[in-house]
Image (tube, rainbow, N blue to C red; front, top):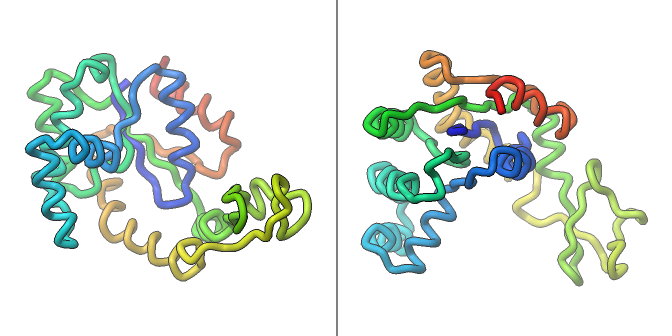
Length: 214
């Protein structure tokens, strides 16, 4: 399986990614992991990326593409992979298509999770974290036994600054501006497969498998 995950923050990509890589026995590829590995190993690409990051700049599309292409040529990707967080732009998508064509390959699917705005906000703002031990909860999906208190240590639960509604609205807005155009791009290529991200996770996995095959 060679697939791309698309969907706004809070759509459940992380939850399904875990299930999909286990089901298909392929690696999950994220640009963040690639950056960290190359920087840690001191590769030429890693050093270039570090220079941009140290100066507070975004890593250019061309360098991101080179890093991903290098990763996809590793032995563990021979039987497929799940791309999470890449591509983020039309340029990256076009370069990925070009790379796949050169390798005599193609994407099996671009898995796009559709979730209502109110649900996204609820998911993104519902996390609560224990001030004492760091245990994580969610007011809807995984509430503590006693409201406001940690099950593990009894510590006080708090909402982090990056989980506020203002931050959530901004994250969704950034996604819609920069990444959502990929939905139109992949619709035209025929690779896009839409799924209801509000479906029960186990049922959703089976729906994805039924569409892209075992």
